[in-house]
Amino acid sequence: MEERVLTAKGAATRQRIVDGAALLIREQGVVNVGLDDIRAATATSKSQLFHYFPDGKADLMLAVARREADQVIAEQMPQLGDLTTWRKWQAWRRRVIKMYDEQRDGCALSALVGQLNLGDTTTRQVVGDMLDRWLQYLVDGVEALRASGEIDRSVDPVRAATAILTAVNGGATMLVATDRINYLETALTEAIDDLRRPKR
Image (cartoon, rainbow, N blue to C red):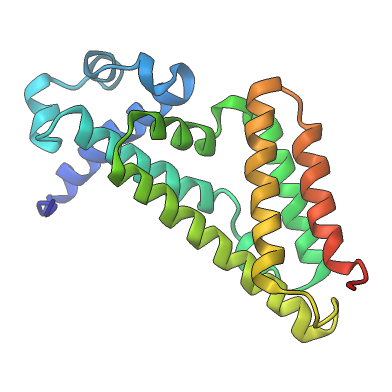
């Protein structure tokens, strides 16, 4: 769908609705939130909501998915974008664990993945694109460690980065299910430490 050009005021109003909807979905879950709930939470009239989101909830949920996908990456910055030394990798690891420990089931990743249950292919593409962006930052970081000699050149950047990304996502999922951070902490620490383990 071609997005309309909005005035600065219109863009701010649209963003306010998206932000309010995202917060509500984090708190209550996407299946428990309807348009009336979002209108009430954001003090938005029905006509105003459909002005910015002509297809109603489908349009709004896609906008929320894009917002949360950007949040997943943004919340890890600047550490994620500068994984150039072992010390910086450890700083990113600590940031991720602290962030998810504080947010628990209210994290952007959980809210975003929860929208996949709606079966919308466009939302699935948003999630896939976000994971690809995330993976590329990690690949770049592993390649930087190889280039500097901090890890062995036999380490495969894509395989290693994939294992690390999977550790974060798997650990975050188990955190939501159990309310225990140790799964994420252990999985991510082991995946990063594996970068320095001797390879066969």
